Length: 361
Image 1 (cartoon, helix red, strand yellow):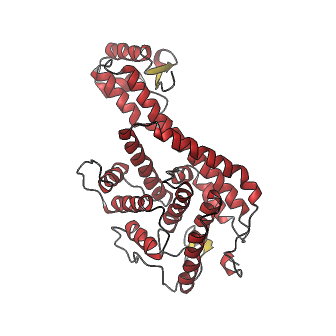
Image 2: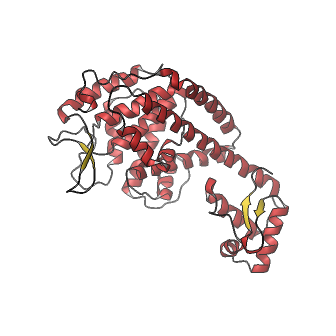
Image 3: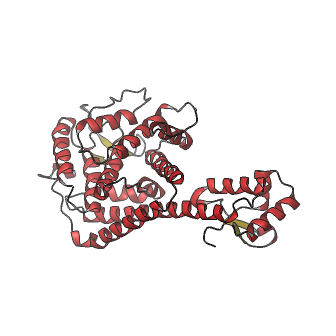
């Protein structure tokens, strides 16, 4: 029996007490994030916003096996938000996900309706040349199944309600979403994600839209775009995500909500680290302003492009020479000078020496 075959299956039950601490942590971290965001300069704030949204756009697609060009997504986002951008030709898929994310954050506080979901779906299906009907709920007679394995050893993980039930199920879902704004944030976002996925109303794109709905719910709870790194965090441990979804067999969704709350808090922490990274970058450049040569400036910019993860294993003298074109002797002097100026710190000795950005001197 699939969950939707239960009478009144959508009347989910769960133990609210196990989420109480997570809800408190969400509110506390949200306050920290809003405060930290205000410490970022206007220019850096816009760049950070674009970076966070582009990360989510590419990662929510990657979860579904679609690899997009991040730079193209960023370019499309900047153009749609009225910011300066390069004039590259953006592929349809990258333009489509950027359009959906722009729509999501630009209208997060609007009530949900069929038209919004159809618009998001059209964006996601941009450039598709197969038989997918964009901007409409599925109507096919074939069962909507999530399967794994090959033709001879196929496993059905989940079968969604028949297509003829979708309009009524979606009417009920949208009604619930718009009437549930007073719920605790993590509960509502987690239920919205799961409820939508269980209906699976579209032929494709259901996972991406369900994560967008979770972000819409979180943003509505804050009264501003949450910019939670939800898809980025889910993508890092996709197996756990799919296992948590697959484990939902009855209207009792306590374990799903526990998983979802933990994931949102981890995603929130990732966003806070991103903000701290940008603040640290500003402070670093304040310390070394007008004290860097052209090579050093180029190397630092390249290191910052790597983001939170940085160069795998740290920056080596060889890396520095490749980035700047410096000779071995010049690279040694430049790197020692950057350490002295507290722009970098180093670990190891001789050929094992590695350099890292010094964001907290």
